Every structure is written in C-alpha cells, then in structure tokens.
Image (cartoon, rainbow, N blue to C red; front, side, top):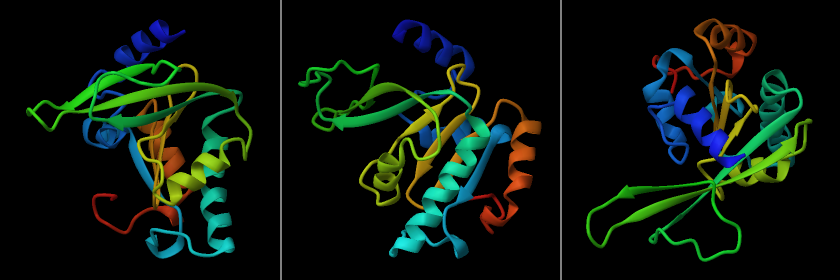
Length: 180
C-alpha cells in the first residue's frame, strides 16, 4: 500500500512533500480554498459551544469530500532521521540541513472508514494546536483536507470543484483579500 500511495502522491501533488501541507496553498493556489472554523475568524475555541462549531465545520466539509475510506496522515517531527518507535513511518523528509539544526518529518498513515465524528479526537487536538501538519485524503488523493488551529485548507481536484465548495460555505471564508 505504501509504495502505491507514494507513487500516487508524487504524480498528483509533485510540488509538495506530504510532510509540508502548509505549502499546498502556495504550490496549488488555483485548487486551494481556506475556511475558518469560528465566526469572526477567531482562532481558538474556548467553550463547549465553540468546540461544537469547530468540529461541526470540519465534519461538514469532510462529509462533502469523503464518502467511504480516508487516509489520515499525521507527522511527527524530530532531530533525527531514525524513528525509534515500532511502527514505521510512511514517509520521511528532511527540512533543514544546516549542521546542528537538522529536522525530520516522520509521516504516519492510517486508513479509516469515514463517517462524521470518526476523527473528532484528532481534530480537537488540531484545533488546540497540539497536533499540526495533518492531512486527510480520499483513497485517490483527489481531495486533500488540511485542518489547522483556526481553520482548514482544502485542495480540490479542479478549480471548478474548489469554487463549488467555496460557494457552499461563503460565510466561513476569510475576509483577507488573498483568502488567508
């Protein structure tokens, strides 16, 4: 599975290593849309009601993108290319090669059956800025969903798909002229 997925990623998204999801919006701007998770672009939820809004928005968008199986990609960043744990990462990337400042992303992959609420624990940790760099994707890697603390970036298969999704959730868009 890992080799096939690596080949598929490299064909569909050759400009971005999956350990660097924040670069997707830079390299694929015509396919990118950003939604904020709280009204007025508030970054962090503080109340039970705000957590319900955040998880509701994440799950609403994912329900439009995914119907059955999903890949959940979660990175762990270290100062060593060697992973000390038992489970092997799907991919590893080096980010800084300046001597003494090397850093590596170890990307782990899980396949899950999608239904709303399936990954709410992970999404809550993302909303609290405890986890970062997560990507959720369909098995064909056509849609990429990158939640972050404060919102979500979606990379669509086509500009028309992006525009249709954007138009359904206009109230969740950033007021920033460049969509940030």
